Length: 597
Image (cartoon, rainbow, N blue to C red; front, side, top):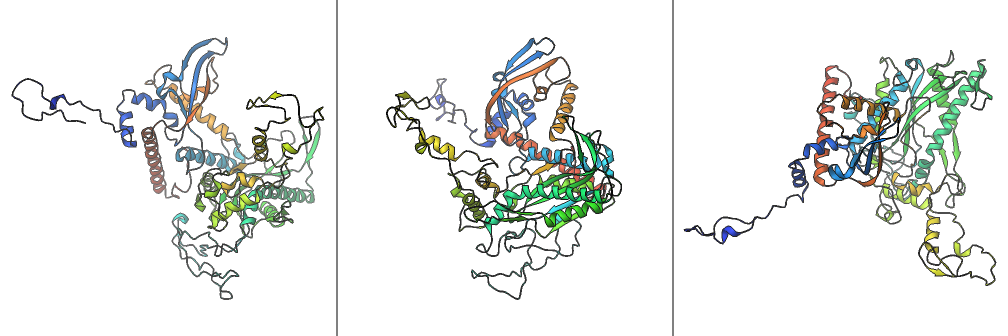
């Protein structure tokens, strides 16, 4: 800003040279702080805050643009119409809904709380699940991956700490061996160090060349199938046990009116996948034992008499021990890779009355915590990789994570492609190889070839890069799609259909609560559109939106700073309140067990 002070003292009333200097408006909104200050000083600041409140804590909200119509559902008459151009930022903001805490902490916290309620309802009831499930046998199971090579580990045989998250117990030596010194590649095969909890070498192989990276990524991609077969094997074991005990099968009427006989007992699981520091997946699962009601197959009823926790543990242990299969053939390994569980399989009974060592709240909180995590434990946090970006992360001679990504891309390469367009047989024409002159509708090229020579390369590339489904001839092609996840392409939280409620029900309940809360606020501007109004209502007035995607993220870094700072402070206050309440009640700190908002 140029100064408007006089350059020399004035003795007359005439304007001097210095006073004629123009006043330049300061430009300070090129920084996040300056942009936030510019937003906060606008007269419509509080209206903007109210407008973005639904997505205020989201890191990268979705912007929607279009029209909103207020319609009388009984007559179909449009009562009011407004466009997003008249709203702040000319868009409606909605949260991204990402479950990963590294991507969006606010949406991940909402997902975590919903997951906690969903998993806990399957153990103690509520949210539409009968309370009688609290008496059903339930087991907390952990299935781990097998060993693909020796890695650095922290093993504590005897815990004396009260909080495992802050464990400072003395660990055992990592890999103390006296019978060997070097591996075949000349690297030490022993490690006498007692690693701390945050040591960066945990999960890293002692020898990168000895470690079987190919087998691990293949195991990750087929781990979902292994879990599916394990569940089936456990149910078959329970059905066989019921037949031996003389319990008859149950007649169930199908939708077509036929009668089908089913076993009198079934599993209702809920599981969460966790990526370890070495990049291998293992599963934490809640397995609940239910009975079958022939009159209402979807009803949740207790299992037959005599089926308890011991039978459930035996069924899961038997399935984990005997389920194994080989993957289909691959050019790099014609016999395929063996897929089986590791030696460590933990099965702990769940006490729903709060008296046991493993309670329903602890299990639900533990699983909900891992439902919001992904590859953060390995240090890799990239998005989906392509042919242009794979070179930044894959390296056959690099570190552990780079070799895993390279194995995904190498094993997932196309092993068979469709016949090229230029080699496909054509119809016999009077003039061999040529047809009547035609114009390509895609690029406008005039040609007499049966296939446009300009588009043939593009179409061939599209055929080669088409997403591969499981039914195709190459079951390993998904490894390239999920290379950024080190080969694992399944959902991180899944459940049985009868285990509990759905995420959609929890979201609808939250929207209904917010709508009821808004309806009782007198300071809200009447007639202002809200995101919660886009759900169908029971009255005769509906708000119908014809919205289109307008972009992702906040308009400026200042908007993101204001919104995310407020959300971070709210999360910190909420976490502090839960910890103080847990301290007063002398229970486990609330940071280890998520509590519903």
